[in-house]
Length: 129
Image (cartoon, rainbow, N blue to C red; front, top):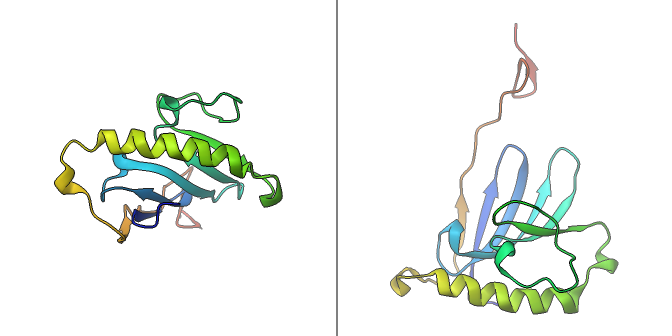
């Protein structure tokens, strides 16, 4: 639907995500797909989802910004509903670009490759000695 937008790719300690943005900034991302490493859940999300209409109350999330649909089966994905949300999310994102010279088209950008998060004595899958 938005072939000239930029693809931002994030490989973080807890998820691999890619999103579409009007610039190279995460704050201008209007939608994304994330695969959560711990439980292999897939989220189709809206970076500013709290600011778009969700009349069917399908979006999950209670934070100040991000809302998503948990994708369990591609055959159950609500395509028509998501297209409506995408249109509003895109317009919302466009309004957030104050300096239009930041806009770019068609780039694939790798962002924020985070180091492995240290948890309870484990580092990169190995036990501390």
